[in-house]
Length: 417
Ligand code: S3P
Image (cartoon, rainbow, N blue to C red; front, side):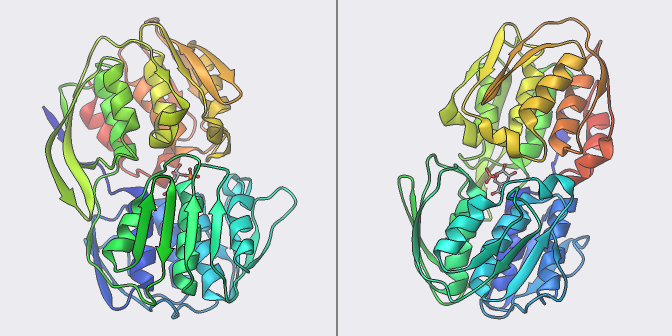
């Protein structure tokens, strides 16, 4: 059995830093992900006057400045490649009632920001966007009013931006989602003394006027663990793999259920709780894999894992079909085009759908060079497929894995056959 601890959850790491910064008093954060994206959040918070120490410490201690304690930045806020940093902090800035300009790399600058601009404007902020709706985005915060917002997209980032804006401004908000998305923000706000109620697909926040400081142990990232669950499912790991301390929030575990449905041997051992989230050791091994249908309703719970699942499907018996996943087109790359283009480039049978893809598996050797478009999850998904015996796949930019999983290639070398 190979035991692996994947790094801290990206979504929870961003939120831990933001909420610690806005908290009343000192928060000790352990297990934070030390990746490029989380460093972007730390950098943005520093630019807003929060003393965030180096993320390379085992324990990152943040002295919260309180809900009204941020100061206007004197330079644009550089969000790098990170959509979560941009969208959640847009909500914070809107509520903080000063002006900030958000910038990022080429990939982030092309991503849709109207989805957060619109609700923040409905609350009374002014948001200036370029014609293509991406970055640079200037958020002019104001004294906001409460809002009831029906979001057209199932996006935890949009939901969280509205919740954070309401919390910082001290106004009630209500968000209706078209489908349930990850609920880390809701859990973390509640644990810090804010009243957040969930009724079906509605989330209601009643401001508390302050946010308690809270120490946090960040669980391992299920989206990172999924690469090794996939590797084991493909029989490309040297032994069974035990992934310790993985977050198993039901909003994040869709890929594990799909892998199991495809025939992988996968179980959760030693379930417990950490940082307000369910965690477990995930034990994974190979199985005779068969294709499956991934339904639109499942998509939010495995949205970031679809590149990996497509790569696993290339080695499964029969067809795998995904629909209702049009959001993939506006991630760090157009992941439908990137996944299908790269699968074909290495000799697999794959086809684009407007809102998903079809992959027909085979066991013929796959070989070629993958173009990541700087997208971390494309790099890692094909890294896993390349580890399957008989395949010869290279990745043009392996270093882009740093966005979410800086030690990915070392861990892969240790776990693969
Ligand atoms: C995230 C939400 C998802 C996900 C992203 C992280 C979050 O994005 O793809 O990697 O931390 O809230 P959307 O909210 O755009 O679906």
